[in-house]
Length: 487
Image 1 (cartoon, rainbow, N blue to C red):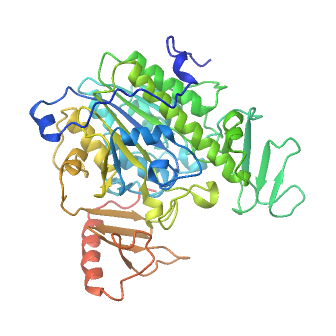
Image 2 (image 1 turned 45 degrees about the horizontal axis):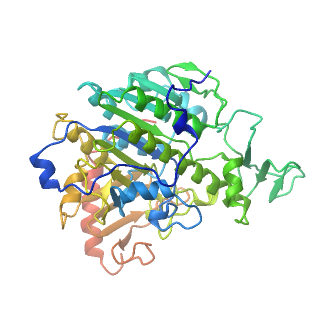
Image 3 (image 1 turned 120 degrees about the horizontal axis):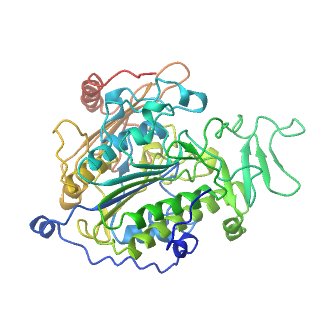
């Protein structure tokens, strides 16, 4: 049975709109350098498929996100924060290693039965943030979604995590069948009468839709909720269960440095909205959007609960909290908005790879800063390991310490790369080249100036072929050093 940690009941289901984070005013980087803080605790929170335009601090209006907004106000909000892939698994492989996933051939997204293929997983010769931190005395835990291999060599507890509570595949239903206390939205190829469109069950609890043209994946097949390696029946909504377990870990390890990787499956499909949240969005006319809004509000409340637990433990000042999404929102599937960007999950347009990206660390980062300079998820590992005093070979990581970017008034232009099969992209400074895959073939390279055209409406490739050639040479040089896909 799931555990209810002693002393944590106060934080499990109550999230105040006036959370006391105890964050002092911004700390100048020069002062931080002169008097280095003790090694920080690290809480890395990853949302699944959350679009750039959804949080209030990124312009979202449909769904209040007071806790994400407070996290932004108490730390740094990056307006051009990227991930390395527009699908879950490759993005997470890079986040946890600090290395482009193409360096070790992790280019594809495992789904369904492919998760159990013994070739599929984060290669065992790649070291995670958890590996490196555990070696210098940190307690480490993964709560939530893994999606980096479901066979024994790839288990999280063999990849640097002391503790694991969650699931191994790409997704999971939020409550066990018959799905009590939620309204569930499911993709289907046809409605009960064989037609297309939407169908709602007589009790209003189930909605079928054919608009995606496929069936909802069998997320729970061979994919139990695990504590360590043992299956566990979890009656609570997974968003609540993962919050409970994260609070428990923080509570138990408050006296030592810790690394908590909290990987929510919200707001990933299947769309399942808890009654108590769905009731808050009755004003939204579309049930599809209403269910998504309820899930996002649930996620935001849960993040507030985590921050409340950090505060209750007296750990605000020297805990680095990072929040980001693993990729852009799946707009057609979830309604998740990437406004004002073009594209969605699966694409290398900005909407697929630019994500909400927040960091709060009162001892090491300023308060209330908005950073326009581009950063990437690879920078998380560099920041965390640097702050923890972990020595890493100069060529082992592909990111830079976020404190360096935040501390520069005019950061040097950086170059970011993306390769997902025939989908390719590169950003250097203000400029981006991009090639999408068509049916069985790759398209031509497009050129965008992201400073003048963040929505990528105007292709400038024909007007500036010399720039395209220069950027393409950079891309070819980089790609030639990467590994071919392993599966």
